[in-house]
Image (tube, rainbow, N blue to C red; front, side, top):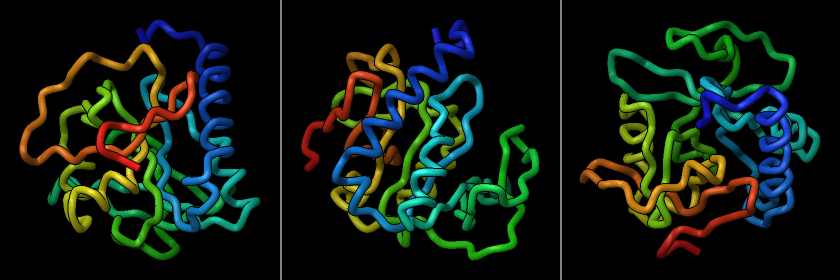
Length: 183
């Protein structure tokens, strides 16, 4: 369904999702934020880049390390130079600070599917799970992790493997969905 979306539909739905995020207290409290550049018609959070910068938040974007199959987060400001990375996704050219995920107050996750328990279906590489597993405890992970998705990406249930990291919330064009057991 995501592949069949028009550019206009992506822009409209992504804009609605970003407005929900920008008005949410969990976002307003955060000072350091992990964002992503979209691929394959994912929710486009680029308007959050501008809002975060305007409100004094520090933005960090993921850069994959294929050897460890994990991510590092690099400081980014709107307008910084970018290049197409190894997965065909825009990445910052590392010139600023690199931080571990545990230094970020809030991390937005792209996804293929999600369920109301906070399980996330990604592209299958495990990069986010490997990286975010280092956060201390499931509660800390869930409080920091927010999926961005279209409402039609919700599934009745997603099988959870022991290494899967749970999200605390998902934001769709319908609003903020708190996942079971989160704040």
